[in-house]
Image 1 (spheres, rainbow, N blue to C red):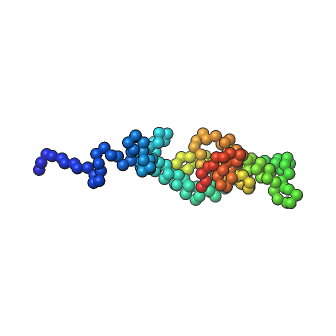
Image 2: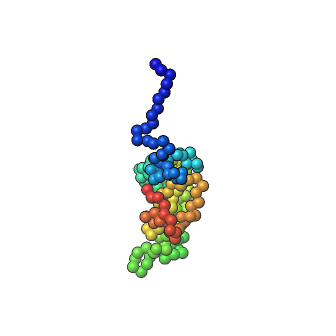
Image 3: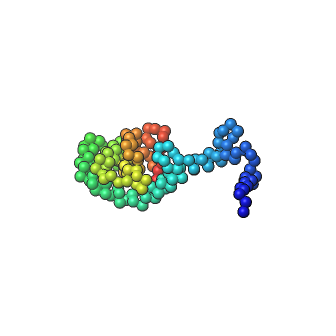
Length: 177
């Protein structure tokens, strides 16, 4: 045995030439892809791979448990929702001349439903630790289940979210499950 270590580099690699970095130090597209997957984010300490995995896990969890969570939240808020609906019927005309529900009525009902359910619902957490919140649907009856970080300001989506994920009266969109 000899006490020598020979290293000849990687086949095809040249000294001073980097595969993932330009001469000015910026990353090539391959470098951005590689380092986005490998480096950790400063806020949470998770790699982007871990974040994507948690988002997928949350998405599957939300699809699987939506009915159970919704029914429990609705049950916890049922009495207050009935009172709210009575008051709303007295203040707004619920039907148009054509017999369809009024758009203003639907949006007001959804906003109230979301507020009541958020106030009365139990704290349910997704696998990533995000809290389940309720957001008003825009243009149709009901609420969307949302996964939000603790302390997220729900007033940003108070006017409701369309089925496409676009926030009402804003150009921003949210990720939908």
